[in-house]
Length: 109
Length: 111
Image (cartoon, helix red, strand yellow):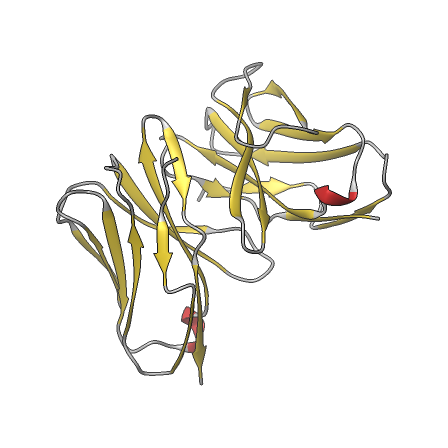
């Protein structure tokens, strides 16, 4: 069974702090997506990474795909309450999408 | 912007009722998906479709069926609802099979 492990499961930090969450697997993926989901809503696509070692930035969010395309990280600089939500990673392999269970992030004002 | 709409945000049904969940997308995507999301279990794929009239079972199809008569519409059917089908149901569509656009979800409660 292909698994995507996300860590930590839960993270609660103060506004203004930096944080990194991780998405790890033993499988190689053709691409990997990150989504953010707010309570009571569907996930919203943030980014897709395709190339090993690729780094993409979305304002204060930095996404990196591992060199071997097995893992990814999301770094948030100066977190704000609006960053609160469930962050999901999803890997694409052999025409299948594997979702991680997510990191639930809470930013305290 | 891609828009995926789901027929209801909240639904309460009784055990044994037939339940229809409708999903419509407006971006001419060929691929459509139904998931359920439960605490601690994450997103689980129920059914998906890569074309009109085509359907494939996902990881947990038992107790569900689907219909895709038109490209933009993908329906999930619970033939006889049971309490263990209480969940958040999410529909998604995609052009590339990797990047999915989700609807707002339907929170279904079966009493």
